[in-house]
Image (cartoon, rainbow, N blue to C red; front, side, top):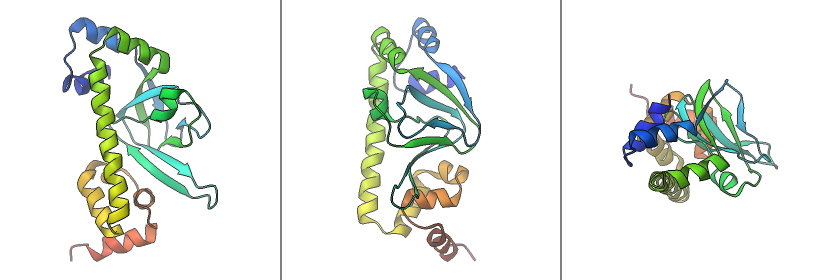
Length: 193
């Protein structure tokens, strides 16, 4: 399992066999069953989490409506962490929950700092991950402000086809900021006859 993460890193940073062994020693495996929480609103995010297999949703509960607002999904080979809470070790404002049985590799906050000190070239890898995450957040903000619901849906399908295959439609609708019924109408309208 740890080899999957090492392979992901080796696309950006080459680790010697000693560094690989050291790197692997920092990570532990955790399995979440469907419905289990990785993080709850108000808890401190104690681990950075790499998804080996499975699907997670990060969401915020709107205090006025009680509605679940999807922030992001995480599938195989993606990360699922409240970056702000993890870095600053302060309470999270959202939840991360397994949509299906999910296997993770986790590293604690202090271990993460220690790992970066002992293998400095990993700073580059985690910077690349953060830049990618920031880029996707920027695109999402622009899409939400400029595109209509239909354009956002087709952009989502184009950008994240694997997510669209694994995640129920009502959760995709929440992520897009539309009702499940409206998404159903969009899909029906574009269904090949």
